[in-house]
Amino acid sequence: MKRLYKTITVSALLAILLSTHSSCKKLVEPSAPTEKIGIEDVYTNDKTAASVLTRLLAEMSWVSEGTNGFPIILALSADDLKVGAWIDATTERIYFNTLRSDPTIWWGKLYNYIYTANDAMEQLSVSTGVSAPVKQFLLGEARFVRAYCYFYLVNTYGRVPLVLTTDYQQTMNLGRADTVAIYNQIVTDLLEAKTLLSKDYLGSNMQPTTVDRLRPVKATAAALLARAYLYKGEYAKAEAEASEVISNATYGLIDLNLVFRKNSKETIWQLPVMQPGVHTLDGMTYILRKVSPSDPNGPTWQQPFLASDYLLNAFETGDLRKTKWIGDSSGYRFINKYKEWDATRPIVEATMMMRLSEQYLIRAEARIQQDKMADGIADLNTVRLRARGANPGDLPDLSTALSKTDALAAVEHERQVELFTEWGHRWFDLKRTKRLDAVMSVAMPAKNNNTAQWESFRTLFAIPAGEILNSPGLVGQQNQGY
Image (tube, rainbow, N blue to C red; front, top):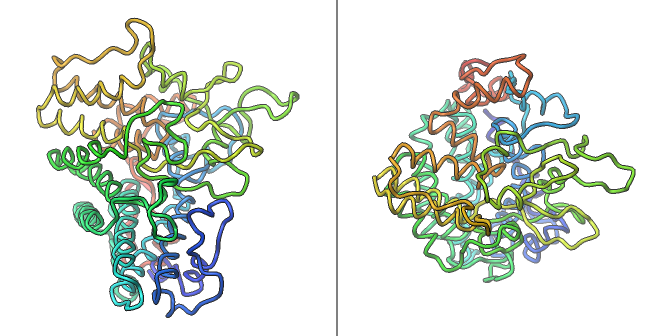
């Protein structure tokens, strides 16, 4: 377990502190240190201590966007996307749901982030040089990051080692923790984060800002807590946390074309664009375009993904999400939530991590599960109203007379057409509602021209084989079927 849980060494932590990216300047500067420091000095003042968490948030882009990110990989695994051009062998196996091992970067990256968060908590707790307000906020950020990482680990791999310290001699023999224990830790971290984080968004200088939403705040922790409670089946608590976010005047539902803009009113948390002169990697990957007239129409090896028929057929008549969030290039339908790809244009979008509409959908489901049918349907209708066309009969309100079964089916539908290709929501929704087998037994053969059938064990990804070989506590603990 030494290789897995002591991945971030002194030199790696210094690299996080000292490296900067010009395109994420607002997040990293001016607090990032500009000269080499010793590891013992990292948590001796506000500037260097803040730079650890600042850089950690920026580093999270590795699992947040592009072809290696959770959103695209899990959208490929589910029924959000189809492939229209050449893809590499690994992406092909993910798309066809035929992976036999885990070649992704997720496990290692997420445990890297957890290590840094654990180190920050340990060091800040004994630091005397960091001011009390900054220490409190950074401790909250570290708790939030750890909870966020474990949420994706447990929902991707199932039972995973629960690492709460940087001492690898204590953790090297850890086995896989029970999912209940992992969710309990997620909730504990988020409740603590809510008490520690600022209610206002802060910049890299730890001062309030109104131009970015790049650092988590109390509402961010509440939003993830609402999601965690929903997954745990604690519906009253999920409703309460979602209501707290929805009632916050900082947030609101806005025009569909503006949702993914930097600092949009719907944003609860975003990450910055990480490459100079490049827009979001999801936008760069999804948006079909012809750079020159001689370029072919349709998908290419650089932009190989299209909206699936399952997704396109899910939209009701008059649903503007189909026209505003699905692009059309000579009949090829592509994901168009992000609008920008031209490097000559200003960077106006940021990578969306969490947004308000999910909170309405969480609260709707939580209320319906508690038999608060009218209130739950009202939340669904709020989301539908934002997407309603101008013609009579377009995307009508749902009836409050729906049965509970039909109302929950309506929740699944709204989540599909609202949250598609975002952070694996579709994949996780089908798993937690025990609908994955039914959906993928149809979708998977269609993907691979009936050359393979869906197998239930694929609801979880394989633990990377290298981690098992190097971790005594994981020997013999691979997920079933791999």
